Length: 411
View 1 (cartoon, one colour):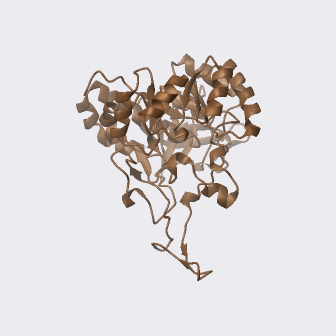
View 2 (tube, one colour):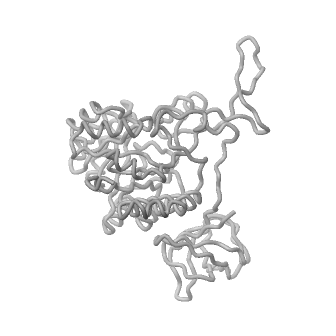
View 3 (cartoon, helix red, strand yellow):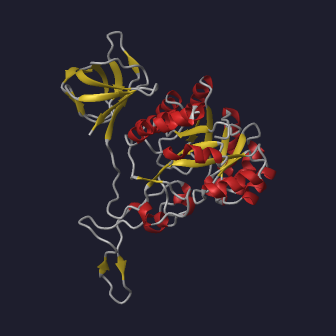
């Protein structure tokens, strides 16, 4: 290992305050979030300005940075609101804002002078001249296009100043389109992917129609469920931390600003340990590889590939026979507090029952298998099961929960 390489930042997504606290607790160095406007995740929970202010304060107390996405491609009608939003962000003081559109960059620079500007992957940052352009404009970081190989990223690193950082996606869903610039959603549903309303039509089932045979649909490749020609496998680079470091990437970014606290905790904790192990000793990193594999598969996924990092992906990077996630574990809830009697206080996310065997997932890389001994609604008393999502419950477990632990159940 080239010890001159600095330890990369681990950057985790958060769709709301719960996920932000989870990311902090499970090992993030930085978190990226969206406000209620100007980000490309319209259906995410997202943060009000007050929540953003509180979340940034919480993260900063723990030495964690917060970046806010404002990476829409603005139309004229967006500009007045964008200007106001950047002035508000200047008061809230995140560590950086992410933009893609030169017009949005200009507004951010003028109205948000106290905050660094990062250039989103949406801007298609595919070469070092583009990186140098944004650096001259005042950006402090570029997020590489997902279509780049590690060789190309290393070439960018070799041609740009040390003070211009490189951020790259290393885990999560891939897009069939070029860095998310997709027209399918708009065409089929009227919901614009580039304004944060993507309906993920790349996951749908398709067939071929021939012009002179209207109404006749021919499957391209078929099993009993159909074919899903655009459905990409998820990116997972847990086996390739050394190569990512050697490419000169400064920030390892996890995709998933729509995902649950279980996904946030699982990805943050697994990559946190892998990065730390590698920088402690490459041998330790290799010795713990099976643990990384076992853990990273405990969040929802569409199987895994290495994306474009080792060359252009082929058919093996697509999933033609299904559009569903693999889900080995179900998220039950996050421990919000522990009562004096030792009961875990949670807002339940999915059904579970007294007698179930579940797992407590802890930030210290340990998992504790426990039994559910009792379930109590503080207002209505004991109950045998918890079928109603978001219900506030006190759970007695055979083990020892702590605040912010994650509860999950193997399926």
